[in-house]
Amino acid sequence: MTGAELSLAVSVFLACAVEAVEAFTIVLAVGTTRRWPSALGGVGAGALLLAVLVAALGPALTALPLGVLRVVVGGLLLTFGLQWLRKAILRAAGAKDKHDEEAIFRAEEEEAAAVPVAEGFDGYAFAISFKAVLLEGLEVAFIVLTFGANQHDVGLAAVAATAAIVAVLAAGLALRAPLARVPENGMKFVVGVMLTSFGVFWGAEGAGADWPGGDASLVPLVVVVGLAALAMVAEVRSRAAGGDSGVEVSA
Image 1 (cartoon, one colour):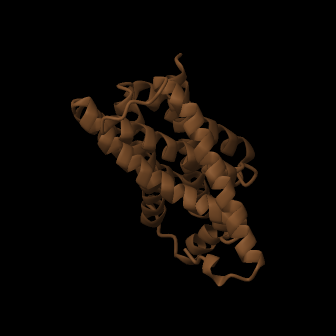
Image 2 (cartoon, rainbow, N blue to C red):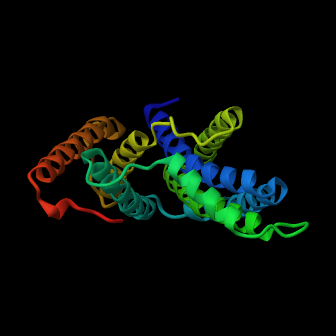
């Protein structure tokens, strides 16, 4: 496996693991509070729809000219990566509440318990599970398609995503509890750095830039983006400590 392939696999695995943890928490809350068959039916329907989207869009993306593909993919990765990185920086600096799977589980559990359970098919459990898998899975599908299409290896990206989902499911089923101990906030920080770095690299390459050393330039680029993000964490933390309300974030 080349360095580019390894970077692709690791990035996809981490990003998809984060999304899988969030979807698992919601499905677990709904399934334990209401009816598992209906909840699992929603999971299956959402997963099937995502598989169809990946199968349909994958070949279409890889058919684009390489330069156009890299500009498009680079722009999309920058959009997603900077969103992830912004939230991760604010959480690391204490300006935004950290993602708490146990709190999310309790909230979903309370909402599910408040809705009466009908006999037979449980439409609520199906709908909530379907929505959780589809919404979190769309980001998984996006990551698989963009990384895989740009490297002309959607298969490798799909394998990495599948491995992440299986690992999360195995851990969750073994514990039968929200995966609160997974370092989700740290993983999001790393994924934000990786997505942003790949976005800059592929976007510039698609626009005609020639990176010195080719794919080897990704390593120092990731380091630079990571150090810049850490510097922002320190700056936001310093402003928050000094009483600067400009770092307050509600979303």
